[in-house]
Image (cartoon, rainbow, N blue to C red; front, side, top):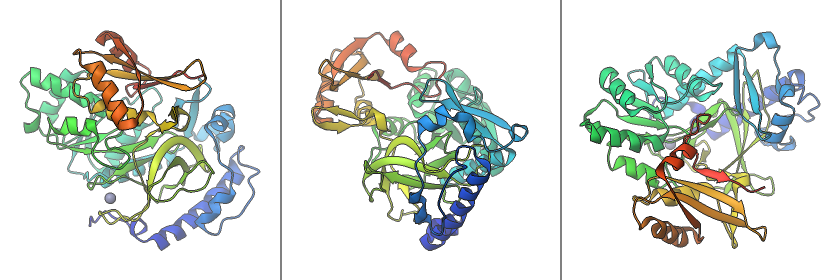
Length: 422
Ligand SMILES: [Zn+2]
C-alpha cells in the first residue's frame, strides 16, 4: 500500500463523517454567498442528506451563469470558461483559494498516478484559451515540487526535440495523439523505448472499456511503446480530477475535494457495476460553487475496494454524454462504445462518428472514415455488428478532410463524435 494513501481514502466511516461536515459547510456557504442557491432549504447531518437538495443542470449554469458567482469581482483571480449548452462559453470564476485547491487537486491526481517530485513533466495540452486543465497541471506539478516543459499540443518534431533535450519522465497528453508521435519517431530514427519517458497521463479520452479492460487505443500504444498509461477524467465545473491508480481499475475520487453520485434514470444512486450519470458536488470552492451538478457524463460506478487499498468510489471511463445515448433498433449504446470498437481496427487510420435522425425519427449511425485499404468499410461493419449489434452507414472521406474535422482549433481534444440530431 502506498504511503500517499490518506485515512479518508481507506476508512469509509471517517470519510462519511468528513463528507457530512464538509457538505454542511458547503450548503451554509451557498446560502450566504451564491445568488443562485440563496433560497436553498434543508439541513445536513449525514452525507446521505445530500439527496434532499435539487440537482443543478448544465442549462442552469448556462442560463443563469452570473448568478453562480459567489465572490466579489475584485476577488476573482482566474476567468476560466467552458463550452455551454447554449453555444456561448460558460464562465467559471476562481478565487485565490480556488486556484490553490486546483493545484492541490492536480497534485493529488498525479500522486494517485504514482508520480513524485523526482519526475519531470512535459505538458502537451493547451494552457491558454481560458482552459482550466493546462493551468491545473502547471500548478499541480509545481505543488508536487517538480518541473514542467510546456510544449503544448501537436508538432511531433518539437515534442521529440524537447523529450531528447529535457528528458521528461511523464507526458501529459491526449492519447490519440501518441500514435502520430510514434509514427514520427519511427520515420526519423528515434527509438521511443530508449527515451526518458516512463509514463503518460492521458487527458480527455478513455483508455479502458466500461469493464475496465485495456482499451484498443491503450493496446495500440503499448504494443509500440513500453510506457505506463494513466486514465484521468475531469471537467471545468467539477474542478477536480478522477485518476486511475497503478492497478488501472477505474478512476479514483479524491474524497477531500468532491462528493460524487452516479444516478440512474430515476435520479437515484445506482449500484456497483451499473451505468449512470455522474453528479458532482465539489467541496471547498469559493468562486463558482455547485451543488449536485449533473455533468451529463455517463459512467459505470464501482464501490468495491481497489487492490491499491482505497475504498473510495471509482468511475469507469466516460461512455458518452447523457444526451448522446443512441437507440438503434432497440439497442442502447453510447458513442465511446463505438470509439472503443473502432479503435480496435488497426487498418482504420481516422474516423468520425455521426449520429443523426432518420426519416422515421429514429437514431441513425454513420461512420466517416479514411479508407487506407478496400477492407476498411467491411471491417467496420463487421465489428459494430458483432460487438454492438448495430449496422452503421459507411462514408469514405479523404484523409485531409477528416483531419480538418477532427482537429478543430477551438478544441483541445480531437473530435470523434458529431451529434447532428435536432
Ligand atoms: Zn486503486
